[in-house]
Amino acid sequence: MAESAKAIPKRHWFHVPIQVVVGGLCLYWYWHIPVPNKAVLWLGGVAALMALVEMRPLHKAAYFLLVTALIFTENRAIDKDRHEFSEAESAKRAAENAQFSKIGTTITDNVQKLLDKSDAQFSATSTQQRKQFVATMERFQINVNEITGGTSFPVVHAPLIAISPNTFPLMMRVNGRYDLQDVQVEVVKLPEPGFGTQEWAERSLAGKNSNVQSAFLGNVSHTSGKQIPISVTASDDGTITEYSVNVYARNRMTHESLRIRKNATTGRWESSFRVIDGRTEKTLEQSKPEWRGFVILPPK
Image 1 (tube, rainbow, N blue to C red):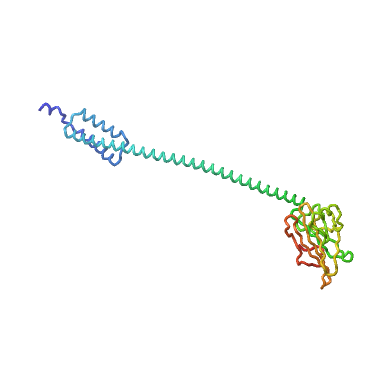
Image 2: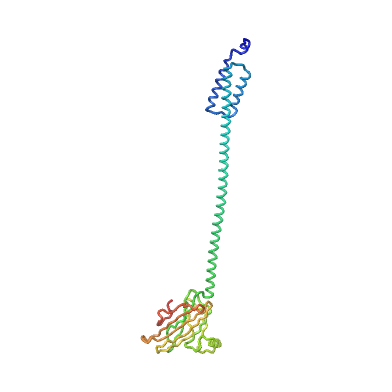
């Protein structure tokens, strides 16, 4: 026993500052966790001292506590490092996702802008083409109307200016915006035996109806009208004299009932007319009031 006691060095005071320093580091690292491996470095040094240097049991117990503290410190350092790494990776992934999202949004916005611009250009081009097409069709329709006469129609009337007793000239005006083309007029005094029948039409075409007067007027202006080289006669005894007037033009054929009388009260000549479309039999115009006196161009 005496030899064993002599084997242990008496001067063991150098363990105290080492233990104080290591203990101080453990306390410091408790609140300020170090990076991994720092605690392991000190742990290795303390373990080496415990293995190589002889010491009293009290110092061994102190070193054991310090080793345990360093182990827990290193464990906390590893956990902190992993946590920080995980957070850094999460932040990195979030930043990358945000960047990719931004790039995707930019690409989507640019593509949408291109599509919007393309749609706007297509819409503008379509609108322009549609306007040009409408303008072309309007110009075409105007040209067709100028060639055919459009919806214009003729009105034949007697200005009631006597060129001989009870005899009056006829005039034609055009209701509409376009001139009438290739106008031919046919005037028949009624009553006419068999008027309107097939036999009467055949005789008229053969020139055998002496009661039919016709004239080719050519083009009739919608602004000035034209005088018809046909005259009509009427009775001055107050009875009504009626004429059937057929007008043939490029755009349509019209039938007009023209009546003339001498007003028994005023002693003045008066006329009345009604124009009917030859295809639809729709009334295009009629005199208002029904009976009128002297007029050159009846108002529309």
